[in-house]
Image 1: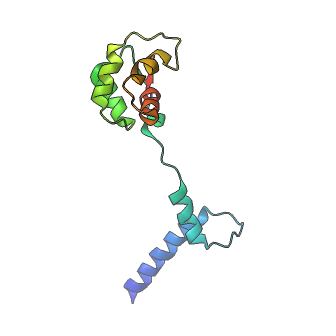
Image 2 (image 1 turned 60 degrees about the vertical axis):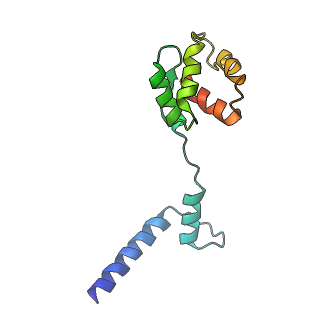
Image 3 (image 1 turned 90 degrees about the vertical axis):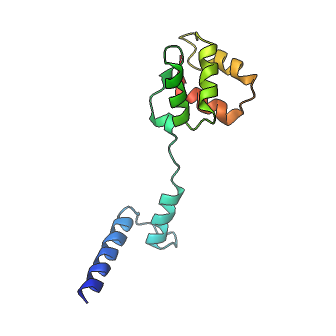
Length: 122
């Protein structure tokens, strides 16, 4: 009997924690379902936006590859090699326009290009 009460207490505590983040507005959804939906709908934060950008001019090829890998770029070593090949980049070109132009000839796709550029700074 004690075990059943303890499990019930833990379940009640977990439900309370989930419901504590809910607002008082009734949308017709139960509190637990609303809390679960809110958690499931939260977008994942890409690594490139949480990690500091590294310099395309001064970082080593392996450092660039690591940053690209963390950003979710497929074949990060290949792209790091291309980034290093086209150095130097203008310091005031924060959009890395020249790098974008050089990499475009390899048809990386928009998503890959955006991930590469999001991980780098001049």
